[in-house]
Length: 77
Image (cartoon, rainbow, N blue to C red; front, side, top):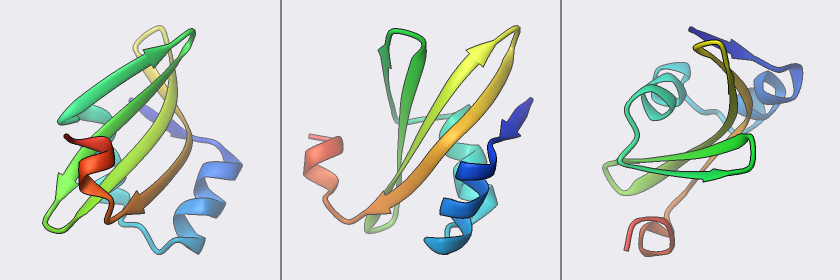
């Protein structure tokens, strides 16, 4: 289950990200990093990478923020 913070919803709208891409990135990332209680999920979509930051509690992913970039090699070397 995914829950989106107000900040995440605002950033997703501002950055014109697809909710489907954000969900796919969080649920089935190509690469996943963990730092303390936060996760950075990374997924390639064509010529761009979507990055989602979330925390996990009791099987629920709380989406903190998300963005996309074309700097593929920086995130998926």
